[in-house]
Length: 366
Image 1 (cartoon, rainbow, N blue to C red):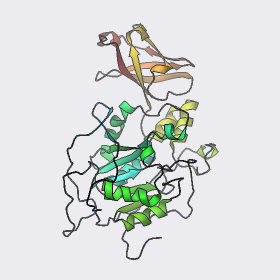
Image 2: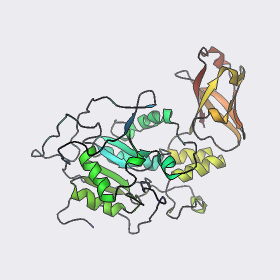
Image 3: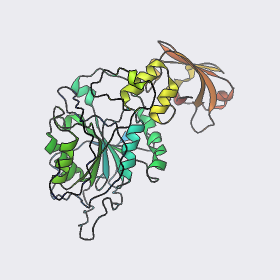
Image 4: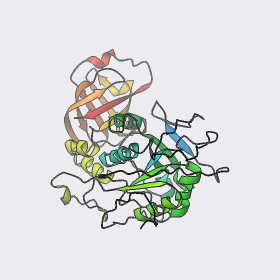
């Protein structure tokens, strides 16, 4: 429910499906889309004084690795049809995310649902993906390979620019340990007073706050209280005909696109299905040493050299090997329990510079 006089659009489904991540903070459920209209309210959250506590902020650099940003402040866009009487935010001391529109979620796969979040955020202003790092360590989850390698995330987000008004979304990360115990109200207060965002976009099943105590409707209510635009959009559904038969083990799964489904499709080796969920071909990043090149046509890399999740064991034809900015090389791939073997159809690898101890190669599964 929204407070009287609100002009914030609330697009909630009739049924809310709750989720939780145990004893941790439930920042999850960014599986989204479909907004019939996007009416924006003029509101910029203003707050004076210093930050109440330090944020650990990391942005994706051009090299793909995380680094601290400089003090450069981006130009603020008229995110919410800003009125002439809206005060301007002071430039000094602002974080780069100030004035932007943040998509909330857990962006492991960067799948088409996550992309839709970014699209809707870009319609309101400068789009950011706000996510939380260190969750596995804090919550004691077993480590697992990411679906998208960290050094490849910038490429994926850059490819979204054409969907987002020619503005590639930027990732903004906060250490999970610093927000784990925040109540829903404290979290929204942080968005307003510390991050100074203009608006948030979330999926209908988004939950937040300590022990996942807040849902999408509470997010809208609290954002209204703190003068932030809040926009809830429906889930992007999995269009695969037999997707309803998939047992994800997730009680909130109603057939929407999710990182869990991507992992399951990868494990099954169904690369066309993976591509449908991701909106692109899956790309595996390998750290290859000179000794991994068995001959001019074959590379064998141990699983420990894979920077992200490979498909399940099997033989994969019609793949592409990418070496830096060189043209792609047709190849086939064999994945087994210990290694990944890349068979090259041409001899172009011998022309590559192998003077370095190792280099990153990419395999794209067609």
